[in-house]
Amino acid sequence: MVDNLIELREQAGLATCAKRYNEVILIYKNYLKNYGDIPPIDRQMLYTAYNKLILDYNFKSYWKLTSIELNKKIDFDYLEIIENEIDYLCNDIIQLIDNYFLASKSNKDLDIVMTLRQRADFLFFNSSIARPATKQIILQSALRSYTEEKKQQILGVERSRLTLPINEPERVLIQLRKCACEVQLSNGICNRYTYSELIDAIQEMKSFISSPDDPLFLQMESYRVELEKIQC
Image 1 (cartoon, rainbow, N blue to C red):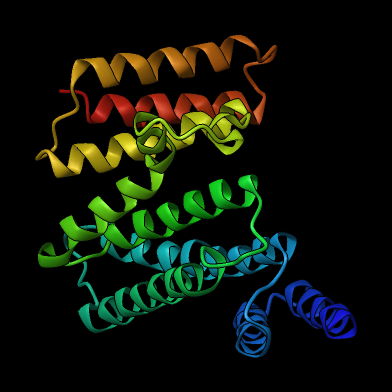
Image 2: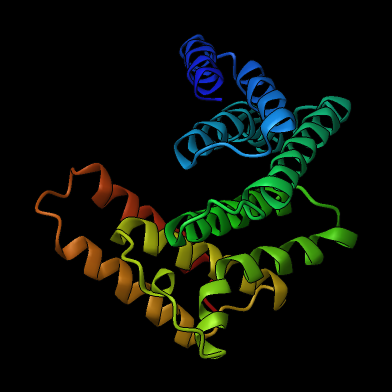
């Protein structure tokens, strides 16, 4: 198995360098069928391949099509193709996470936390293009994955994974996505408590950054602007 894993990483690495992300996905899926699991470092490479296809390729085309000027004609057939591709990719990786990664007996505490976060992210992406009939179900599932740690704490489960450190930018991003799920599930309403909590987290993060030109500072500022759009 070690030899196969080394070969797997070599093949996936070459495909990644060549930006053949569909090939990366196929390589890992074939390995999973035979061995039932891959180490966390390889899971991250698989997540990256899906993210590239979903966000960098399909969503960029989707946003470009849906933001064109009103006097220009939208190619709805092409738009539907993109939506179907996003839907397929999101569902595909979520099935892999549910069937293999969350079920893995080799998971450590950090692996469980990171897997739940990744699952929530892909559900969050999928909700962006979901039809009204399924959008609420997807958002609820994403919110459950984002808040799994909190639920476990309420139940009194004491495990180290519940208090694992998380870097500030990621913590703020997760809070914002959780907020976005809650807002959409509550008909676009962002309560003042949630808004204040998120603004405070963003401001705290910005206070640690010395230069306003720092990419992280700009990222935090973009989060703040987006949050103001959904303030109740």
